[in-house]
Length: 217
Image (cartoon, rainbow, N blue to C red):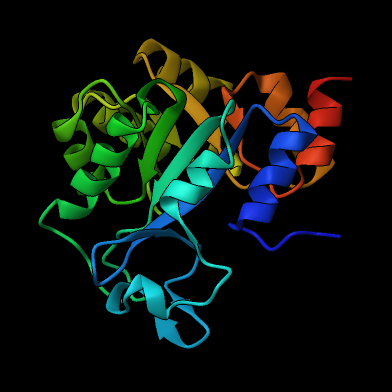
């Protein structure tokens, strides 16, 4: 049975499978609680405008989700952007502060990378704790070479481009800038194999079974 994405069942299944890491999407509720869900809307309710107690049962807390992944590295994607798909945008830095505070207090600092499509949010995470790895998720319209230079200027740890925009030259530029490269969302076996052969640092995929079979033949 396939587990619903971003749920405790999915996280536990991934850990049992033996993956190196898991990616999740964290959001902030109106009451400040942190929960995990990919989309801004769940069952017709905007997460950012709702109290955590008002959300569907399958929407897990950030704390419970992290506890389910003890022993693996976690890519914590903060859902904070100005695009039309989001209900709100936090420019105060409070969302970033809450995420960083939890990770620090719960002892996760050395086992996570916090990522976001929003560069200002990446900067906020870095400002609250310079020792936590931060990766900039690159949107479709960003030039990867320029983004690598920008990430270096902002003292980030990694860039996360869409895999089709990564080649040997871009990977070499990132390495020279001291940046890791984690690619998304790589699902076709041929694409997974190509990224592994290229030598990227991480492959974000919806098909961990295939990815593991290719990475550990």
